[in-house]
Figure 1 (tube, one colour):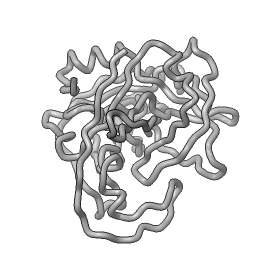
Figure 2 (spheres, helix red, strand yellow):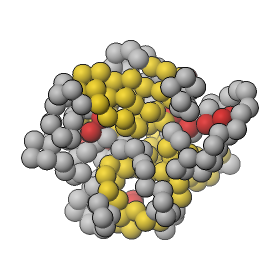
Figure 3 (tube, one colour):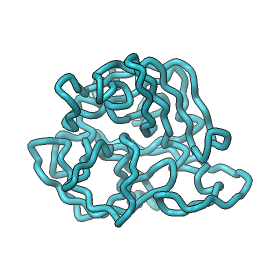
Length: 243
């Protein structure tokens, strides 16, 4: 199990009122403070010509976790050709930080036989320390499914707000199978949205990501937990975690 601490940014920005969205209504000032600044709105363009809009979460100075469908088209199994990132996103002209430079990635998904949520996860490595500007979440990478069987409530922290969730682990043999019962009407999540557990550690509030939302069916919402192999390969690829 690898548990990493978080960095919180204290930001002073102009105030404004934001209309309610799918999540909780937040002011412009709230949306441009941590933890929302560490969640990206991502435009993904693929070699097949498709475009998708996903979400990603900074978990280190230069590392982000996101859904595999941000890097591999779930309809055509073609690789991403271009990615553009907005942090603290409100609109295309109103955001906290925009990144449109180069990056590398590793994708664990395989959609050659159609979409499968089992390994719909991946990560992005930036050549610069984007997290020094945006902040980053604490994280828990583990192969122990019981880490998700806590009685704590979790929430999805999106670029447009957050949602309190009730969830139930469905099948510990598949990392993707987490059933999430969400508030009525709040089902417009972007793939890659973090499942966050919030707790207090030595008097400080910690926002810890343990999984990412990937997909939904008529019966379930699905999430993929962060496993140790992902942490190890992020380290190998130069991700600068806090220790």
